[in-house]
Amino acid sequence: VLWQFPLISEAGLIPFKEFANVTFQHEGWFSLLNFPSIFWINQSNIFLKGVLIFACFISLMTLFSRKRTIYFAILWLVYLSISTFGRDLFQYPWDSFLLEMGFLSIIAIYYKNRFGLLPRLIVLAFGILFFRQWFSMAMTKVLWSDSTWFDLTYMKYFWLNQPSPTSFAVDMYNLPMSIQKVITLITLIFEIGIPLLMFFGRRGRIFAFYMS
Image (cartoon, rainbow, N blue to C red):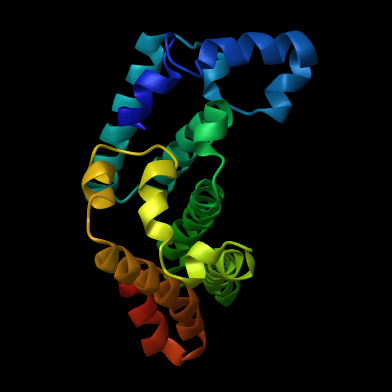
């Protein structure tokens, strides 16, 4: 989020202030319910930077405090707020996945701190979300009528067209095609194979966790 600040700031491509003004004009007070975000309070650069710095501080606090439920709830609210106002920059599958997993984590931490155990239902929900996220991404690639996945040249084009590319993408794009094909093949193997490990007992799930 910090490195995307120039895009969502007041002078950015999709400024929070413009989104707030246009949305409120069209939907009135209902926009606060349809687009939940703390950035309805203020959309200035100072406020945005303050929220991001505060979130970084809270993230560090989760490492040293036992009151992680509150801290995780705050971080979840901040990310929900950014995703809502960030629109196209934060509308990818992994953004929804982070919000879902984050919400479950809040419940899981609460139960763990209060009762010392996690309900089986929560553990199952984590597994379902993990499997759905990875496997659905794999199936999208396999069922998509794009020949670049089948001839393993997809990653060559991905570095140019990926969401929110970085300067590192230029170096990856210049790699030989043979390496691009290996990366594409590894991507397919991971996204198809890793989710299936969820059905291979506790060791399979632990291995899938570390591999992902």
